[in-house]
Length: 91
Image (cartoon, rainbow, N blue to C red; front, side):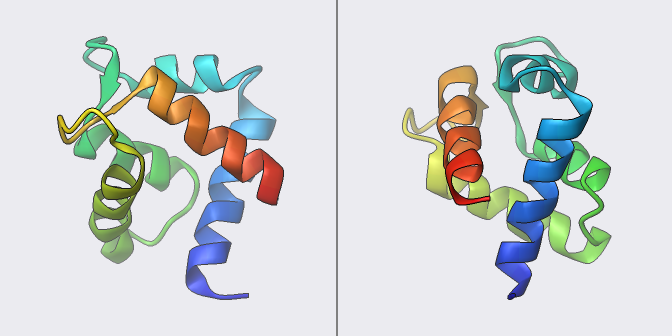
């Protein structure tokens, strides 16, 4: 299993074991309560999932590139739910 798969699996484990729903996870990491996860908030999620500190910024940036459909350099609740649904399907 490659690094990407390990990171995705770790995120899936965090979300599925620590939170009742993706919405609960989103609310926990949306520190400024603006309805979106910025890069720093995503890095906090990755830290909680046990992702290496060296990789967090890179992974957060890739997550934003992959899931930010609104173009605001953040992941909103709907975009987050899409990402988590993909994790649940794949892991």
